[in-house]
Amino acid sequence: VMEEYDVIVLGTGPKECILSGLMSLSGKKVLHIDKNPYYGGECASISPLGELYKRFKISGPDDSACRGKEWNIDLIPKFFLGELVKILMFTEVTRYVDFKVIEGSYVYKAGKVHKVPATEEEAQASDLMGMFDKRRFKKLLLFALNFDMANPRTYQDMDPIKTTTRDMFCRFDLGLDVMEFTGHAIALHNSEGYLDQPCVETIKQIRVYTESLSRHQKSPYLYPVYGLGELPQGFARLNAEYGGTFLSNRAVDEIVIEGGEVKAVKSKGKVFSCKQLICDPSYVPGRVRKVGRIIRVICLLNHPVKNTHEANSCQIIIPQSQLDRKSDIYICVVSYTHNVASAGMYIATISTKVETNNPEKEVQPALELLEPIKQKFVSVTNLLVPNEDGRKSQIFVSRSYDATSHFESECEDIKDLYHRITGTKLSLGQSSRHQDIFFAFFSSYTY
Image (cartoon, rainbow, N blue to C red; front, side, top):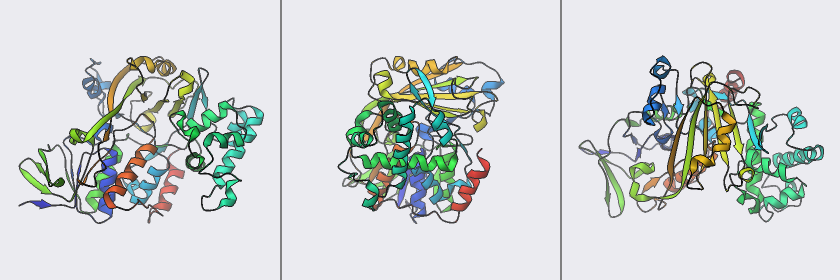
């Protein structure tokens, strides 16, 4: 007998699991299949440490440190803020996953790491800005926080659609250094193209950063205790709570298509019918194309990164102009305090879009910031995007994970997929009964 479902989801990457949870919440009958015996897909957490050495075909130390369960190394670590936090509140996945606040955000300038100010006192003491720039920078932040697209009185005589970000920065008379760290370390743009785009998007992204910062104090970023692999597991539990079915370590033999539209999935001799299919690129290689490459270097350290105030966790952004590149380099640092490494150990992951035939040389300045490095694991992967929007075939494919060290661009992919799948925009609104508990949790637990 053919089992019937509204939606079948293939793969347990964070995006697939979030969409699976959202479909279940909306009343859809969901079947979730993963060919792997573990959660996370591309973003899997590897444990124990010895498995990471095996994955990268590196001979590692044969001792208890490699076998111990205290290691959970994320292949693609990304910090949470803004849209993803709203999704966590809306779906109430916070019941299943614990978080900690990342201790600081830093930006690279003239060969040195500088802290992005998180308080008024840090702004006054910062060497990222001169005295007059600090006043202008504060005015820009106040403008962004007070900005309301529905209220032209908050525009300060600037049309947010017609005015470019470059013109907005000039309006506040910001110097080049302030423009750079504001655009890359606060608004989180990864290249210079944003400067000639309408300023409204930069204003929104500054708001997201500053509002998250005001909530968490140390930085705007959150990260799961035990690593990113906890997020897919949390959404899988949510899916099960709402009647979804989950099958792991199960090969997909065929995706059945009739008249150009998906009809079913065959797996281990069984046929599961569906009206819609959601999957990551690995399940439909003929429906995606390569648009670039990403280099990631996972580094094991026995010390905090220099010039980060001994932070147990942080983000470091190297703006592209500092190294005469086209895209930024990101460094994501977590440690034993997140239960992802053994006592006293740190995991720093470097990532960027490949621009030359020597990817590892491109990230050398980032590697130098982390020295001494006990061990590094280098990977170069293709950046894949779907060939079509899925509306005709009803097969909706997520993009590969980009080089950024935060989830904002991935959330845009989630919202875009949701819109194409359902025909309506994802409206999170106010979370349900757990919103107050969520904020109380972060204020009491994460520091």
